[in-house]
Image (tube, rainbow, N blue to C red):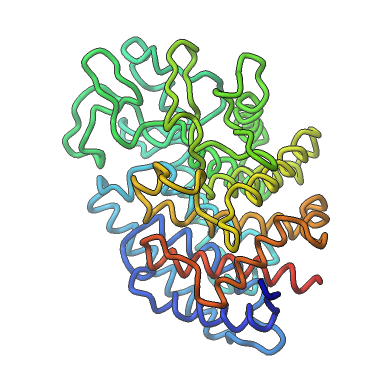
Length: 423
């Protein structure tokens, strides 16, 4: 492909930012999707909107931040009056807003959050409170507590294999007609007369990755203890390295060129209760970004261990070689006939943008990532720039979700702009 230029990326990125702000879907009611997209829009504003001449004025930034905050308030009010809607039920949903809003603690984002920094800090803390401790309603106990607060006699078969991880939903046996999950009781695998719920609860990689990222950021801001990040770090360390695991049960899948993070853990404590979801090969692009970003942020705060760099390098290689169509990144692996594509392509299509966001953020502070992506002909660098050229040519697929189509394109361009500015 012909090399994309910095000017091309900047021109297209500005157009995308402006179109997203006016998109009815961005101003709609899908709680987590809006939070996810907002996260990358603030990265764009922080990184490049004012260079070389202000493309977005201070007044426009202020209006965007204020309007998004007001819209968030309307969404949470909707969640108060109709708390059992699906978008206010899953613990991972809250993580997207928490992570995006936690940037308000950073001086480097002061020019973005302007007079609303404290309001967004409160969003970060309130969403984290739900993720960590639940809703204080004696029904939802928080993502780390699904197993500890369930009926462990009835659900003994679901005991997690390793401690320290989190669930995206609570486990319960009794019918709850007002739950967001209409298929409840909520059990991850068949137990007696209980059949597993379609969507969970599971220890999915996405909720563990979100929890890890947000725990890192709130610890850095002084609002969370090191024990919390140590627990979730230990969970991933166990799934990557425990000697009781084999190639079929680890969370990291070996692929040509490196490794990928599987979409969810594959077994429970009893190794005979094997539950290989999609034969243990399904990977989502967003999980690659979340785990990559979380490990890089954990390393920045705590240093080693040395295997973090090995894993960062492995994910870079795995995504570059196995999640590429040849000219742009794909949202999932395997590339064809993927269970994610057939189950919910609209949501999972965001995998490209989520990965690019955390790749770009890590590039801003991690020397290993910087060295890798600044190296000519590095496969990941080439995939970012090829994807950016595809965006500028108008050829990136939308995979069925118009909002995420624009989000994927903007996230790719933000990453490409970072690389090209340093060339």
